[in-house]
Image 1: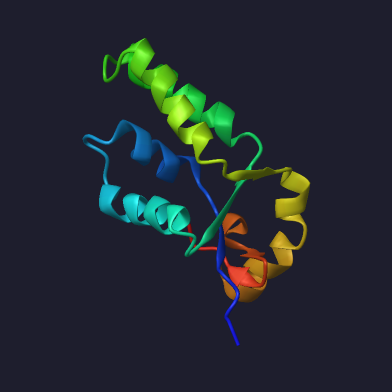
Image 2: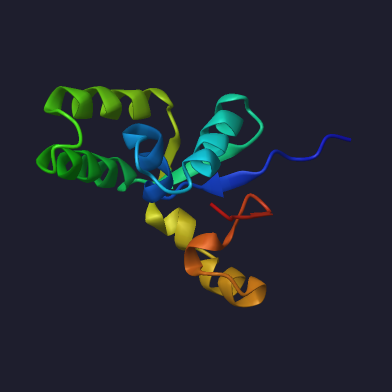
Length: 119
C-alpha cells in the first residue's frame, strides 16, 4: 500500500526565498521544499493571490536595489514555470477553523488532502 503524497500550502515568504536567494534566512529549508516538490515527493498548493504577492516582493527588491527589473521579470517566470496549483481561498479556508482548533495550529496550517500543512 502506497502512502498518499503530502500536500502543503505554500507561503509567499518561502517562495520568495527561492527567487531572491542572498541574505534570506531559512534558505536551506525553503530550497528543500522546492526540491521535494520538483522531485514529486510533495504537492504544493497556493492561494490564488500568491503570484501577486511574489510580484510585489520582486518589485520591492528592485526598488531596494537588490535585483534589476530584468531579474525580477526572470524570477517571476521561473516561479510560474513551477506550475504550482493555485486555489481559491474558499477551498483553502473551508474546514480551516475546525482544523486549526483541533490541531492547535494557525489557520494557514490547517489540513489539506488529509495531511497537516506545515509550510
